Length: 459
Ligand SMILES: CC(C)[C@H](C(=O)O)[C@@H](O)C(=O)O
Ligand code: SF4
Image (tube, rainbow, N blue to C red; front, side, top):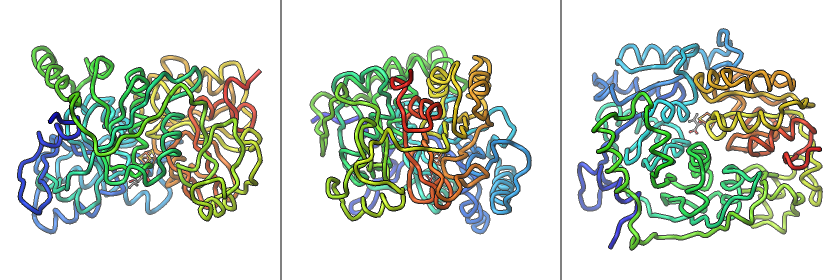
């Protein structure tokens, strides 16, 4: 029987297998940030161990960094960042600190440097590591004790998850983005729909996505409960990678591409679960609740709890969100717009948002936060920063920023945002803050009207 992409990459990395025990996987790339690494390094130190492969380990500062730059004032944030610096210096790990041209959100910098490659195993103490699966890598988040294990041994014990195919047929209509697609998928299968599975996104609509769009989709796999999300590498993947600093060159490139092509799921492979969705029926999608599965087409109204799969959860969510069933989603007023994060903080996202804002003015507080300093530089070379500033938006430096409000970029209690990030949990962007997850173009159009809006609605 044929094998799936996930099975091929998994098997390629098993260094030890024993009955009744998890497989021991070799890890090709270990990404690190300041939040989940301190105890892992402490553990190494206490055991008198070193980092086994510092050359396969790379660190960045992202969650705690103030995007207006300047010193970190919050004591906990400051300690986390300083601890990462000390640990990286002591253990010989490459670090991109605040102010460095290579700094950025961990899931943005891996692909940007060409460190993320098809067929790799990639881990990070961060749930959105699934982003890297867009390249056909097997990439997943791990806990801090596992971070220590990988630092010490470059391996990880893991049980093989089941496989799920999400087949996306048809083509996304104009104005409908990868973000709308993944929000619609999560609304369909639920926040637990992918549990215990590695998802492979397949089909015509996926093949037509850019690498940026594929990363947006894979990024949110975890919000459907999946262990990882993957997309088979193809010409789009190879074109994105070629020439990047860590991509192979010359004969090694040709050999790598030949291998990468062999990773695609065999035609006779069987998935444990199959979900089908028709992209051509989709419209811009937004969330109304407090988990990423509580979403609806922008043209719909706030649902009554009994119309949802989980009326009790919907009742609580609507109360927290301050929303009344039957209110058209287009009438929801927001006071803050956030464009950024590892979901939608890449150059293509900023281009799309800038296109909507060109020649227009924002009526909300609008933060545009590039996912990395290189994205920032590229956007500035293209003049996008000028478009944002002329519209009245704030142009910031790279970091997680208002995605999680572990830094000065937060919502005040009761404030409502349209946000291109991936989580709308209670308090996610600040205590009492209310989050609507949207695509970059919906975020930009919303900034113009102050209500949830698609670009097509703008005069
Ligand atoms: C801080 C980190 C552990 C966390 C994660 O794992 O995802 C964060 O990145 C998030 O998005 O909530
Ligand atoms: S941008 Fe948001 S989701 Fe991504 S790593 Fe940072 S906090 Fe997590």
